[in-house]
Length: 104
Image: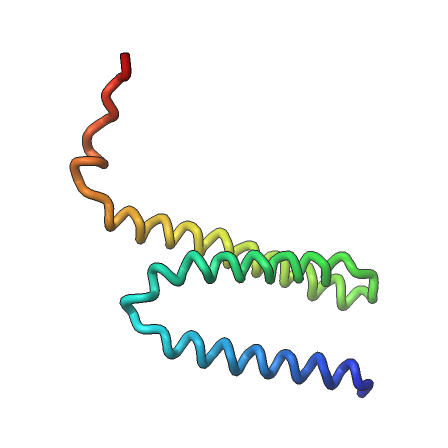
């Protein structure tokens, strides 16, 4: 195991621990506003997975990168769909049902 492998494992374990601690400590009331910030972080992981998939370090690296790209894309799109659904719950009923008046 090279020193770079040790650093990569350390970063992975640290990220998993911090992520678990952050997620478990979020109260349910703050879940909706934090969803948008989580989508931005997922976008950053999508960029990182694109870099991993595009780097030419072997077939296994490219395959795992492609799986990461698909997973991150699903996470980003699903997060935005859920956020949109949650925001629709807070709109007033008369704004949804009434069509916009023509200007003129």
